[in-house]
Length: 193
Image (cartoon, rainbow, N blue to C red; front, side, top):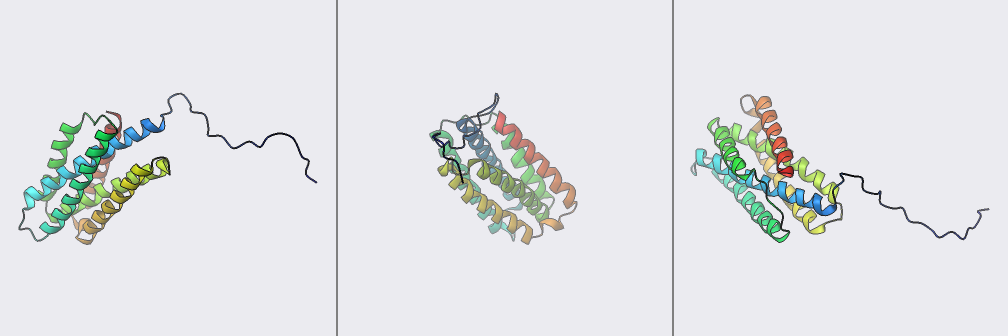
């Protein structure tokens, strides 16, 4: 038989923050900053690819479709960054040049290399958005909804790239791994500066 006590029931408490832990606001500011930077970089990558491949390329419609979606993503993050008064990354001028150069260079290597670039970038972004969704889990429904929608479109871009020969690009493993490493470095830097 269980013994009754007059002690009030206690609810499990959130762990106390430790020195160096960031508040939810600080975490979401970092998310918005890095996502804004990432969408800006994606717009520049597609701009570089389209500049090289041109509008009469057989896959021009696919590249235009993905580019237009990235422009919508960037416009939304421009709104969010302004509404929430989040400082954008100071790396934007570098990401402008690096994104365009990556897009143009992979397009110069051929359509399959451009698709390998898309696949590599979108794979990293899918993982990145998924980790943000796990961290947010009901704490910021507005941001969570935006990330979920954009993540689905990034996965669509990855699928398009795979269906159009990304893995057939010359030097695919090296190219893909180098692009993924660059994306992960850009994410790490953009969160912080």
